[in-house]
Length: 190
Image 1 (cartoon, one colour):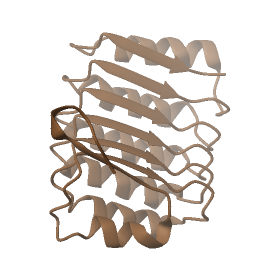
Image 2 (image 1 turned 30 degrees about the vertical axis):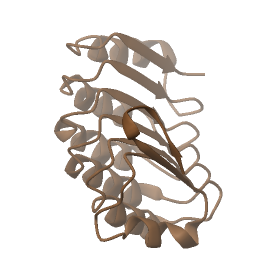
Image 3 (image 1 turned 180 degrees about the vertical axis):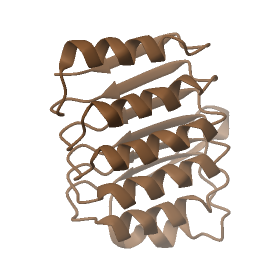
Image 4 (image 1 turned 45 degrees about the vertical axis):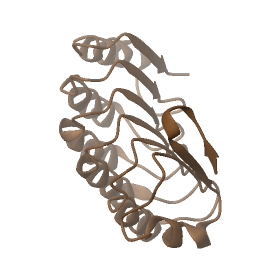
């Protein structure tokens, strides 16, 4: 634990056994900036749902970096994460790494449809690379993003997904450039 500017506390979690203990601190978790790195831990849909259920109780968090790459979260797990983040109205910065997690178009579409309610997020970074995602899922996510009118910085990573690059990339760029306050955008395709 370390103190940052404006007395904001930061905590980094790397052990799946302690995550529920820390996040279930009666909803009064003192940390405002939280990093959770549970990569390559065989986390499945149920594990993602448990993490999501614990995160929704953390009302003080304004910045979350959630790295769950190389797990087995799947469609229901990513859907649950999306519905959790829409309930976390204090989030201003959100980074989610779901690289290589058995996520399909359905999962990404469900996640994208929850983006409408990401009301206060200003900085958003999403990594969905190396999943079974195609054009339909990416376009629904982009449609949800264009409604998020407070985002100033956006990073999307879609490396290694199934699509026809030039046409899809153009469609996504067109949708996200309509975001009102977007200053910085980084789209990673290959």
